[in-house]
Image (spheres, rainbow, N blue to C red):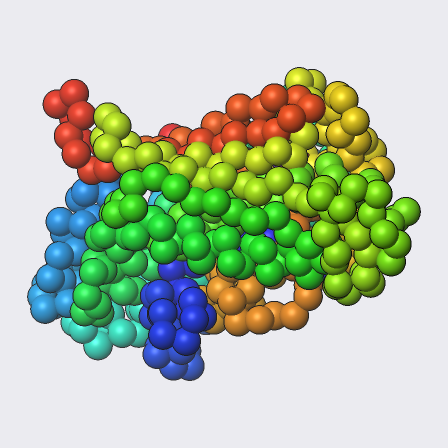
Length: 470
Ligand code: ADP
Ligand code: K
Ligand code: MG
């Protein structure tokens, strides 16, 4: 199977000139540090007192503001770079140990799943490897450590996919009932994963001088640029999948910007736009089969489509509307409105569950009036539940996905299917103190509100990010 998209800080391909992040190949091929033999480190048994010891240690959570102020001019300050390396060395084993403990607590049927076991083993290998690296004292040692870090980031790239597949297989066995809080398990696994990757990527980029960036954080991210980029990519995928795509009308604060990790915003926009476009196309596509090559009865409401699926008359798609609202209470909100038929009341909570998707279901959403969705929710590229965007194919390794897409990885990615888009996007939004909410009018359409916090002081407190789960 393919894999699951998550953002990467190593981002490229936004047009030939627009390069986000740095090419990881700069680190060259990896030579393991002499003390560590990767081949001998294996998770022999699930119980491991060393893991327990590390898991019990406190983690140090840095806010976005702290990361920005620490990282400022770090490229010119070897002491800062070494301090950053030691922070990473200290934090990652503790955080990995906590997740290993979580995995150990899963019911046997879940732990025994080969995909979940693979995740456990990989986490364990990284834990054992990283905790054994001697404290970094020189820039040369940091260079080696950075290579090791990059290697582990890349090795963990497919782990999200394994978790998702493991979840699906366990759910199928029906043995994983409500007693196991799957969503909160995934929330803490994935939030921790985001944290670890942000920590690692921030260190890997902290020594690079890049205008407008501190490490992987863009200090003034142009929100409209991110939107138009995501629109362009989603339209492309939507066209490839359905042979048509709705237009997108963008309005609002034209100069909106925010300090943010570009790949995080790119990911959220891409997932929300895919959902919105899919809803619009599928809620109108029922008319398509009968209209091939014929004259439409109501010229005004139809347009001629020439695509992979052939030539036919299709109903005109109502455009998506995106509005950027800045400056209210220290938050920037992006509202994405579609007329894709909305979400049925009985599904409105379920859509936030990891793995929940209506791909391959029928019917897929609320209907009223004559707005019947197509009976077949799949997109014709083979099998419901197939993966979405390919992760790990982007040069960024992990959190790749979109970068993989950028690099033109062919037609493997699709519009939907893993059921991770909404919950994972909300996790990313909340990670830096923002949020993601949906407002649906069944039978009409959906508004998604993506809110991101500015770094201003609020009620006497700086906006902090939600980091490692306790
Ligand atoms: P996936 O897109 O892989 O199915 P998501 O988590 O992104 O997973 O979305 C879960 C489900 O929520 C979708 O399958 C779809 O049924 C529903 N949904 C999400 N966004 C919309 C929308 N804008 N309009 C209608 N339904 C939506
Ligand atoms: K979902
Ligand atoms: Mg989706």
